[in-house]
Amino acid sequence: MKINRIRTPRVGSVRSAARWVGLGASALVTATGLLVNPSVLPLAHAFDCPDAEVIFARGTNEPAGLGTVGDAFVNSLRQQTGLNILPYGVNYAASKLQLHGGDGANDTIDRVKKSVETCPNTKIVLGGYSQGASVMDIVAGVPIGGISWGSSLPQQYANNIAAVVTFGDVADRAGGSLPTASAMLGSKAQDYCNPNDPICHAGQGNEWSGHTEGYVPVYTTQAAAFVAPKLMSGSSQQVPGYSPPVQGFGPQTPGYAPQTPGNTALTPGSDPAQVPGSVPSIHGPASPASPTTPVSPAPVPASPTPDAGLVSAIQ
Image (cartoon, rainbow, N blue to C red; front, side, top):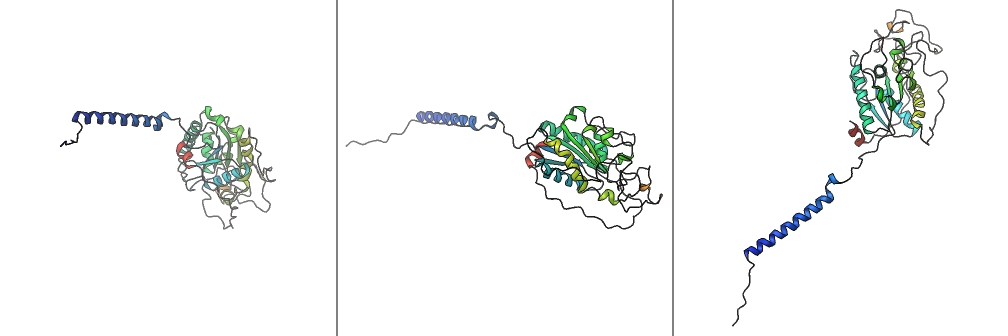
């Protein structure tokens, strides 16, 4: 009777086969790695650069961000152009002591450099209100009261700045506004002074509400109309809804502005901010003014949230 034996593979043969299987698996992993290794793939952009970026410095004691005037300006600029606009609020302590204007200027300059490095074709707009306007004066190399308070923008970045707008700037009463005093950015700048604003206007008819409530929406809309064509230049698009400035309002020559009918002159000495020829405080009258009924600014439509990837990439 013949007995069939079950043969088992030799130990050496098992080891050899395992070795070949291991080598094959290693080769497969290596080949697969070449296909999926990110280092050998072309890099793709995680975001699209905006058409424009608005770098805006808020006023005294406003919360971090663009501030009321800055928000209204950006919203109006979006409405008038239809462009993708990225806003950036200058990071500085906008306190009553006003000791950090130089910090705001440095943050503005750093932001400009990062934006140019990340998105060289994006047009940059600078802006500021009240104390924030003083920040932009420093950036533009305008000495406030004859004193240079911080670093100015390096000349090589001047061509990246499409426009500059300032609102309620005390420099109008302390040596000259940015458009007239900045050799670097003055030709592409516009300054807006409410004729009832004691911070920027010397003369009769001033009221503190002219500074705190006098810029939205009239002057922010005018500023957007000034900037919009500069952003649209070289584009086939037209500025939708563009119209000339409202008669009776507009950029004011330092020391002169038309008066609103019905306003009367204030008694000299009743408020230092109202005395022609003196440089007022940006923080309001020293003593409480007589009660007035505030005029609420027109509601501003909500603006789209910028791409988070772009914000983090630039920052």
